[in-house]
Length: 117
Image 1: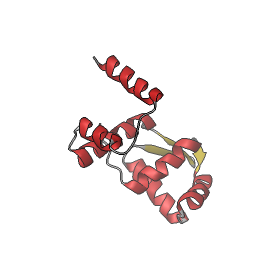
Image 2: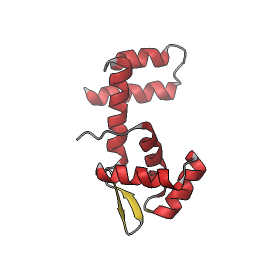
Image 3: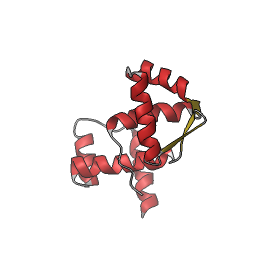
Image 4: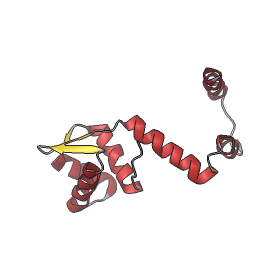
């Protein structure tokens, strides 16, 4: 299932994931500190993400309903499609253009490829 979220909602979610479950007043303070948001902005994002079914706010306790891994996977796929037309090799070529992989990184990538075969 696809969830349409915007950048500010994703930034909010990263704060929520690190602190959940969290009382909404504390979440307001966390968003003010980390994002410079006003109280009304945080509550608007809580409402919007609740309406999308991504989080819930029950008795002032906010928690995610959709697992972090699912949102991160979706956002990664969206980035790959938008930036590289879905071309994984294009992503790797661009990333490795000016960067050398460590032996450990290369080994991890090799193992990931082997597991996909």
